[in-house]
Length: 316
Image 1 (tube, rainbow, N blue to C red):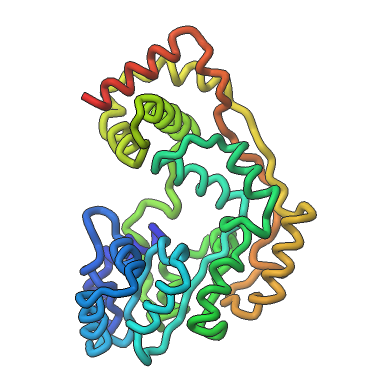
Image 2 (cartoon, helix red, strand yellow):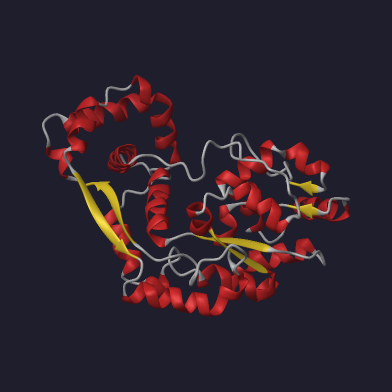
């Protein structure tokens, strides 16, 4: 979504000239998503928002794009409220199916970036041990919710990994497939799904732990301060120890429980996949290694002291 949102924003004028609007009213700072809209929808009662949507419905644009990864987490009343705001406008809901091994890795990193202290193995175990109940693995939780409110026919599924494997640019594919726009453009982002490396992620997790031990509730501020000051910090002791403590977990996307969930999803929603499609399924299942830093590095000489020193510098 970040890659697409950056593209919608950077090509705002070109898209608008072709009747495609990516509203700026819910965009803040360098976050090109409509996160603010998703937050406001949760109230299910917002007069200003209702006026915004009235203005959009009355506009002359052929297509209006709304994009935020937070929309998928809306509760059913908020989804119903969104439908009421859209009125009788035809709606297409685009859902990208990404392989679970990547989602688990990026999902863990995302919650660490926002203050979590859970380790990757613990996060992985929680989802793989109960794939039906997992909001990462079981797409039913999101798709069923939107299908009930907007109908299944409104859903359009994209096999994200199938596009990437065939070197198809996501932005160009989106514009061509969903808004009848044949412009050959690319996103303003350097590449889709850019992420932190395993060492930065673990260091942020360790700083979250220290924050909690100080009686504070860790949040995204730790990560923001770390990335802003990283070049000025002495990370040599911690990074050296981390590099000696790297391990691997293997996610087999075709194991019994996961394969069953995949088959159920494909049986229910496979007909909503747009071209190009995989030969079978929402993506081609594979076994994938995920590298992460174990916790033993904190026992190395000087590491604990270095971590507290880094934390202190972030809090200055």
